Image (cartoon, rainbow, N blue to C red; front, side):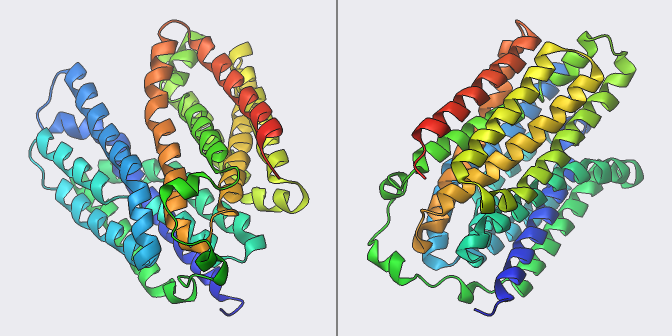
Length: 394
């Protein structure tokens, strides 16, 4: 492989990830409004249908991500990503023509069956880069996956006002089509999908052998915990802000600003993690990131002051972002080339389970006390830091 080939490959999957995650968030934050336009009028029913339609896809993706990754190990990851992107182009186009909420649910179920390009993109970046540049490659893709959802809703809001929600699904399909073209034209699967001698010596790799790799199960637990804390703020932060005395009319803009701070500082954490890992061990970066995130959670729980919460948002973003990329990098370092897809698929499943379960649990706990959610996050991050510091093998 030429010295620039790996950079082109990483750029391709990073750009495709940005386009895909941006396109997705052009329409999905406005799904409750779209369901209302389809004839569901009761607010409770809209909330129920929205929750089911949003939750079914990541749930199915979590179940199938390791299997898609395993197929990527056998047949090449490029064709698996192209398969997923083609399905998203078709299915989001179909969303523009649905006439009732059952059809929306059916499309979301099918999306869950064919999704999985997110984990495959991370695997493609990881295997393209030289071993010492793997953290930077993973960080680049995760940065794109973090920034995209920060940009998408803004574009979606403008499109919805200009062309309507239904036509916005066509725009999302176009974003996925561009991602498909970028991967097809720029990514060279032949320069990476060639098992090395080391991979051959490991013999047949199964899910059980992947779990037995050094630190792998620990990293799955860490990734779950980081994602769990990251997503716990969605159901409670707007309510907490209102409880602190902010006028109802200002709650959306204040909450949106804090979420944006978390998103962009998280992207910085992903981006700079590679540089941190050149000077520090993965154990130090992960544990340090968890401690920083714990401090951010503590600031939210200790004070309702907006400046304090802004500082907490910065710490949360930086801590979770850096720890997440370091965790993926530590796991990726022990996965042989022939098992990258299966391994990263399992890591993504852990992340998706955290993503799916956190809002339910945070909402339930928040029903008793909103502050308890933030202190629970502090405890989780503190426990993760102690666990990594004491159990992780360098």
